[in-house]
Length: 82
Image 1 (cartoon, one colour):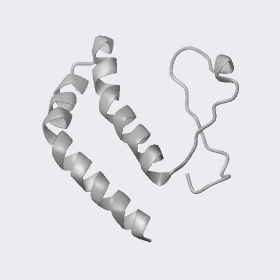
Image 2 (image 1 turned 30 degrees about the vertical axis):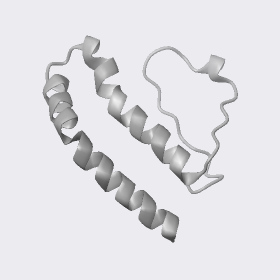
Image 3 (image 1 turned 90 degrees about the vertical axis):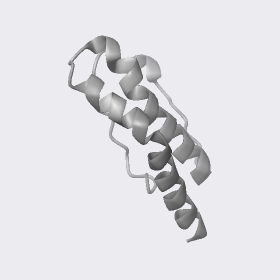
Image 4 (image 1 turned 120 degrees about the horizontal axis):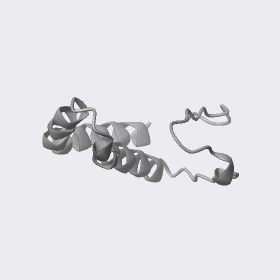
């Protein structure tokens, strides 16, 4: 329960700190320029890595070479709460 409360406050703090960057990302997203993709993905990647680290989870990737190039959708296999 305490970890959930801690994660909630971390999420709120992260959003508050990143509001200026998110506003910039919103403007870039409307331009439909694929050159902006690394910028647009930076904040979600930072948030996801921090969230996984704060929960104490360990991620193991097996078969990354089988992921095709381009856009893909990854779905969890429900072995955990994630």
